Image 1 (cartoon, rainbow, N blue to C red):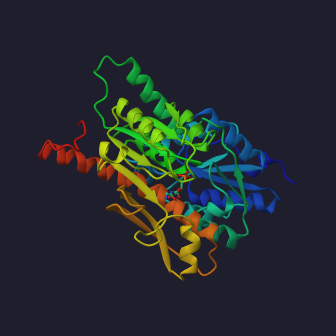
Image 2 (cartoon, rainbow, N blue to C red; image 1 turned 180 degrees about the vertical axis):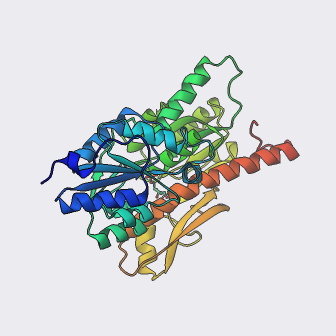
Image 3 (cartoon, protein in one colour; image 1 turned 135 degrees about the horizontal axis):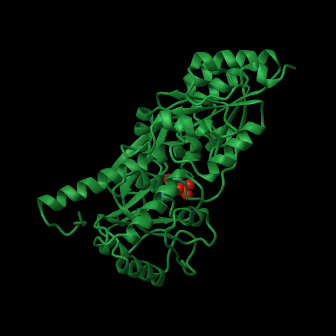
Amino acid sequence: MSPLSSLSLVPHSSASTLDEIAALREQLSQNGRKFVLTNGVFDLLHVGHIRYLAEARALGDALVVAINSDESTRALKGPGRPIHPAADRAEMLLALRSVDRVVVFDGRRATEVIAAIRPHLYVKGGDYTPETLIDEEKALLDRLGTEIRILSLTPGQSSSATLARINAADAKQSTEPPSSRPRLAILGSGRGSNARAILSAVADGRIDAEIAVVICDVPNAGIFDIAAEYGLPTLLIDPGTKKHGHLTDAALKELTDRLAALSIDVIACAGFMRILREPLLSRFSGRILNLHPSLLPKFPGLHTAERALEAGETESGCTVHLIDAGIDTGPILKQARVPILADDTADSLMTRIHEAEHRCYPEAIAEFLTRLRAEKTSNSGENSIPD
Ligand code: GAR
């Protein structure tokens, strides 16, 4: 094998073109070298990125980082991002020992870059699994015979969490009166991927609200780790001794009192697997949102993916609705549809539904808050929230 230096792996300080990267790939390929690609926004570097990129680089002989253009970052993360423009992000990444080349791409997906570069190894981090990669990207990688590796991220390290900590520190130092943004409580029982999507949208400014508390009924549930990552207060409620899916009267009263004491304006249930009843419903009437993994009114309740498959449906999705006294019956605020594919299992369908949920729920919350604010402006109704 030729030494790497003779393969034009000389350091760069600005982004390369796709053609330049494709040429480098050919050169490496001919010399039996392994070419690694990863992609992301990378607009607020933190130690999690540094470790992730070092690990990715160690898996091959050259690492190319494809970064979203400023426009595609705005489309993905909201108008407040990127924190740093693409040229600066490229320069910072290229200053790292682990990064050999940076290329900037448009659009939400990295498919064009993957197709042009045909990496030997594609690396992703975080919540992804080979099964949860975007279908389009996964199909292309399979076609190209590209190996896929998912690297675990450093807990507590993400750009959104960093932004949230900066905002929290700013708020603490500020001499301004306390935030007048609506106060949200997130309720969950599980891993909290939708809580993460909401928190990320708040950090990016896509949702204009303050998360006052994250509440969960299951000790050690993943949602607690996510709340800790974002530096948020948490509360474990004891559901009492009622059977699964229910809360005792005492638990409901405690939950209601706690939410009221925290001056909560809106409650967002994100995988909270308990039925909410009085006195909570009246106290927060018209301000409790729920996310459900089906196209309601079809398949309320549990095991929605299995039931959609059994019923021979051709599409499924998720629904954001207001909670009323029924089970998954309240007024629908927003839905997102996903196709059901011939070879779908309940797991593969749920994976697709989760992806839709992570986009749909933050959007629905943002739209709901905008509507509440507008209602407050036009009449000082009882569902008003601070503006
Ligand atoms: C989500 O799929 C949500 O739709 C579902 O729980 C999951 C929570 O996942 N909610 C319900 O089934 C409510 N009836 P998460 O903890 O990863 O956000």
